Length: 184
Image 1 (cartoon, rainbow, N blue to C red):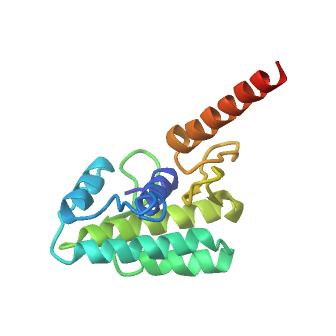
Image 2 (cartoon, rainbow, N blue to C red):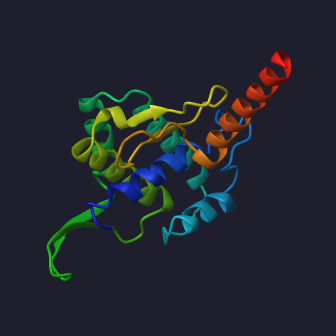
């Protein structure tokens, strides 16, 4: 994985934390190893799951959520560095015509190792390239989700724009229609 591909990595971190039950009003979107494996596959993470990974992924999810919820620069750097510290080997890849820092998972790495590394790279990349103000809570009134905004303008408002953004738009539309009926 290229260490400068923090946008993808931050997206994986956002998707991971938003599988939690508090985001889905009690329904955990990673309830078993099969869903953890599907999550890894959906994000092109080629690591198989093992017994014990489910609990470890849930702990990692809580750790990453805590970092996003409390985005102080020093805390983010320390927390994300601990996520990446013992998981992979860092090297410089010059094969593509330009040098890029890369990291590869060590032999025998687990899905938790891969997710930990990816989330750490995403957080560190956003802190370095963008700003800690890019770590946000969802703007939808009934949502408990969080996200890392890697959009160019930095104006993202929802953890899942297709879901939360649409819900807000529908609610606003219904409120306008109700107001028009009331005033007519």
